Image 1 (tube, rainbow, N blue to C red):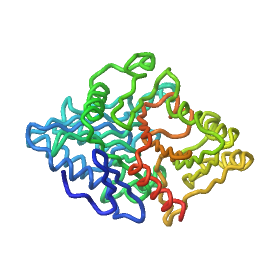
Image 2: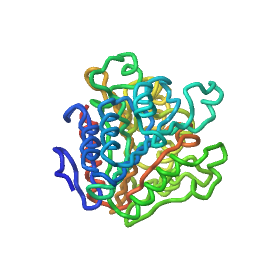
Image 3: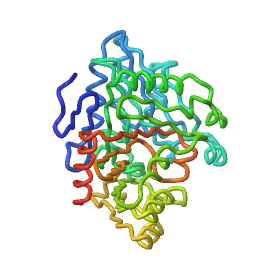
Image 4: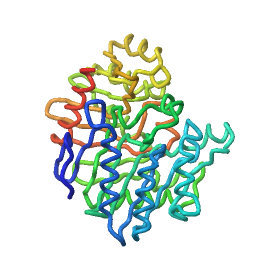
Length: 356
C-alpha cells in the first residue's frame, strides 16, 4: 500500500481522503493519479464518474493503457453542464483513445425531455487492481483542469480541486469485488428505464460494519429506513452540497418531528440549496449553516453523522438530498454502523466545515 498522504485518515481496510481549502490543491485528483501510476501491465483500472475534465488524468489513463493496463471509463453523457466533458471525451473516445474501454451513458444530443427522465450517471467510483485491489467512492469528480481555460464552466460547477470533497478507499475483498462487478456492468450492459426493477438494482453489498447501496431502485430507500430508527435522544448531523424539494427535506424534517437533535451544514449557493430550504428548516427548529469559502469555492461533501447512546453511524457517498438523486440518478451510498474510527474521521471533518 502506498504511503498515506498528509491529512489522510487510515483505518484498517478503509481509508478516508478529504480535499478542501485547508489541503493542497488537487490532492484528491493526485490520489487517483498516484494509483493509476502504480498499476502494472496486466492490471486493470475501472472508473465511473459524472464530470471528467482533467486532461492530465485522462493522459495518465492513456499512458497506463499503452503500458498494457486494461482501462475502462464509463462517463455520464449529458451532465448538467452539457459540454463540460468534451475535451476528455475527445481524448478517451478518439482514434488514439481507449477504444471499447470508453463508454458514455446518455448523449449530449439527448432532448430536454430525454435528459429529464433518464437516470444520470452521478456515481463516483474508481477501482484499481494494484498495488492491491481497491475501490474509491465518495463525492469527488475529476472536474478541474490545469491549465484551466474554461472559467464559465468552473463558475457553474465549482472548482472541485480546491473545494471540499471526499473519497473513501475500500480494500475489503468482498466490497471491492462487488464494486468492480458493478462498474463493469455499467460499462457493458444495455441500460433502460426499467433497470430499477431488476434484482441487481435493489441488492446491497455487506461486509463487516459497512454496507453499500445503489440507485435507482424500487425497494425502500436504505438511508431513509435507517434514519426512521432515530428520534428523541439522537443527534444527527447532515453535511450536503445539494438540499431541495420535498423529497430531500422529508427525512430531515421527520427526524426533527420525532425529537432528534438535527443540524445541517450546506453549500453556499442558492441553486443547490434554495432560501426556502432555510425557511423550512428554521420553522422546524433545525440549526442550518452555509459553508462559506473565499473565492466562492464549493462545499461538495455528502455525509451524515448519527449518534444515540453508544451508537455511532456514518453515511457517505454520491447521493444528494434532492428528488432526482434519491429517485432517478445512478448513485452509491455507504452506511457504516458503529465503526468508531470511520465515524471519528467524518466527525473531525464536520468540525472543520462548521468552523467556516
